[in-house]
Length: 151
View 1: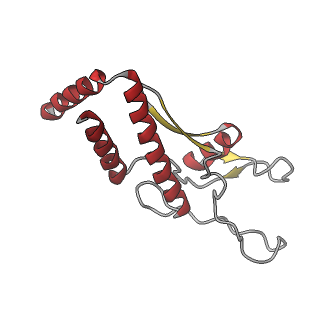
View 2: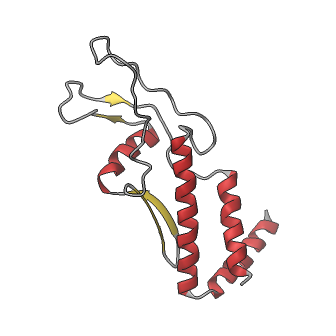
View 3: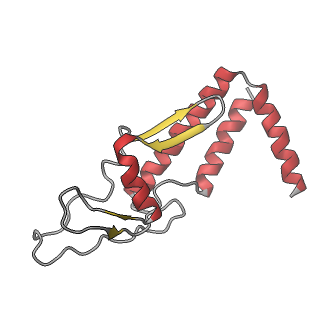
């Protein structure tokens, strides 16, 4: 462990030596890469650790016939709703405005009302982690850091 803390201290010192503008540019690049990775995970319908999302709940018999034609979170993964931004201190990937609540309910598996006009009061949603880091993402971040520090 002590070997890693020494490495982290040295790395943070090197990053601190960069100008605020170059740190912001690096953070923005990291955020964009992370957003692309998260979008691919959501498109593939699996969590960042590689486990598949829980299947949708079966619809009642009297409901509309046929299968659900749209995949889960199709609009949620678009750039309009999934924002990536970088500042000189951090890189952030987050859901924007109105979809934050829905994303939080699915990410943590909370209870929520399905829609404004639904007769059901609350529905327990399955946990479907939408955002997170995997080993590949960490390696991407490391390569971006190394390329920016070595300049």
